[in-house]
Picture 1 (cartoon, helix red, strand yellow):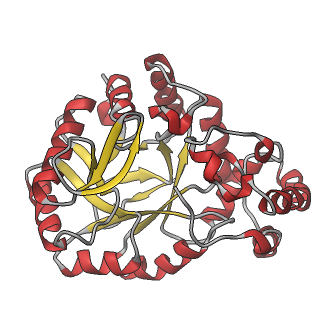
Picture 2 (cartoon, rainbow, N blue to C red):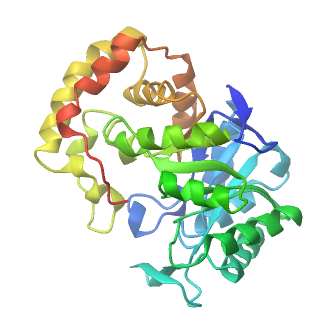
Amino acid sequence: MQYRKLGNSDLTVSVVALGTWGLGGGSVWSDHDSTEREANDLLSACRDHGINYIDTAPVYGTGESERLLGEALKGRRHDFVVQTKCSLNWRGEGGNFHYSRDGYTVNNDTRPAAIVRDVEDSLRRMQTDYLDSVVVHYVCKSFPVADTVEALERLREQGKIRAYGLSNSQPADLADYQRCGGHVSVVQEFFSILSPFHGRAYFEACAPHGTTFQTYGVLEEGFLTSPAFPERTFGKADIRSRIPWSQEPYRTGLRKAFEAWEPVREAHRCSFSALFEAWALAQYENMSLLVGMRRPETVRDTASCLDVHLSSEELAFLEDAVKSIQVEVLDK
């Protein structure tokens, strides 16, 4: 495993990070509900392969992901850098409507009182007295950025959080937070070989501040893991039913791309997952690879991507195969 500082913080994190959206289950991940035993085994596998960086959020299963992680972290909290999020809550205390799902109405609220309450709720669910990093889940223009920054800085001074970042944002949002005195250590944004545009636009904004770019969706919720995956079907509420490559003409284009990619995969003796994780890491020097994982074998395979070294010609060839089906905006 490789390690680096998380942006301008003093946190040392593994380049590969564990994403736990799927751990929360619910209708958005309709094929599996995780157990405490599975969460425990997942963290053990991460520790075995040197992954110390864990990402979660209150709305992943409306608290379930955080609760499961809290149980699994008992006795080994200091082995991991734990990152959760704020701004999305289902307390019914105001903010902007974000979505309704599984009987809950979730609002986006970046006002100071909501940020503080989010952190307190996460501390309780994960049974810890500090959070290593807190990410504003969805940047919101309805409330003053300066107030949000002040709340995050106060929480950092109090020792309840050690660093903070932004997600689902734009480069201009990072500039706004920095201009208001913020110390944004990480931006977490979607980025993959099938949808690279937003990420590439953000790299230039991150560099002057030393901000880590953390990619999510690098495997497009499984659609880049194997040629068979795009043939699967999912319920309407499942996030994977909204992925463009589950529909024509994208599905046929992806099928052809897999055929083109196969010789490269064979040459490196790796999985398709590791191939595209290695592709992503080669795109930007200060990249954190956030990958959703629910099984120990997936952890092992993901860690192996660091052993895949692609030439500039291979990097270009892999992307050329999907130029015609790349998209700029995703519904996630």
